[in-house]
Image (cartoon, rainbow, N blue to C red; front, top):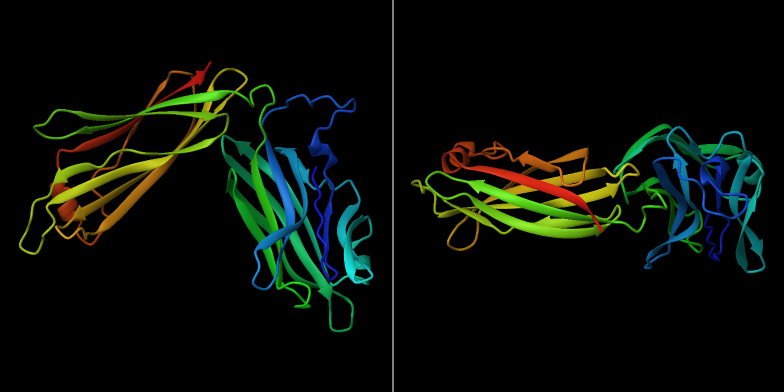
Amino acid sequence: MQIATRRIRFRVLFGLLLPLAGVGMAQDGSAPAWGGERARLTLGLLQTWESKATRRMFALGPIDVAAGDRLPDAQLPEIAFALEREGDDCEGSMTFESAETLLETHALVWTASFEVLSASTDRIELRGRWRRLGKGARGRPEELAADPDARLNLREGDRVLLDFARSPDPRCARSFALELSAELAEDPALAREQVGFEMWLVHESPGAEKRSDYLRLTATQGQELAFQFPHVRVPASVGSHEVATELHIDVRGTVRGRIRPDGSIDLSLESERTLWYVAPDGAGEHVGDGGEKLLNVRPGEVLRVELPGPTRNTQRPERYARDLAGHSFSLILRARVVS
């Protein structure tokens, strides 16, 4: 668990419950036993000063939370990150007081709770709630903003702002934001493993030999890699109002692999295809489409993805259909464990 503090000149509070059940700390200090895929969550409060970069004031986490567990654990009392006035500065501290009690001496309070619904490959699904409280017109606690049924579907490494609030005192900061970030926790026994990828883009066209472009990539466990194949050029038929002489096809995307304890590999493959007509002056229309696949394969198993045919994502679908008639594109992927 990491808790960072920063001195500021205002009182703000960040309230939540501490999920000890999701931390997985061993009593003897040894590494915890691996119990399956877990989401690694960080909940923090961001601060932005006028004409300065946004920085994290406080962070609870990263904490590993298994599917079905919550951040925080509802059976534990509420814990708060608060700023206490010390002379001309404010010191960060924690307290077990309720949010309503803390509002007697603090300007803002955030509370949050999230349950991990699923965590797999590079997707984390969460359900939870948060609220921001402040002092009302008569000094009583008032709910300023809330989401009682927040649903989040995050890719690994995503960061989402749950709430944004302007500072009550511009001498302190310009604004504050409640942020949640998520990734997958790695099996300690596999964290140093590497995954090798071989990728082919196969182009078949009428009256021509099959073309195959090849890429070879290596990534650490859970690392996302970007890939891009060389341009594919297709002659373009030119009509009465058309000056482009070539249709270019670009295929790019990202791939991520995770080795599982049984030796199989979880794959996340996201691909994007861009079609664009190139005029003599370099100008031309660009249209794109794409998709993603999440699956589990054995090392060396071949995955073949047929890319879609002529796009309809344009005002001239008949032109693409005409120039791509008889052409087909396939993306082939093979993953293995790098020994």
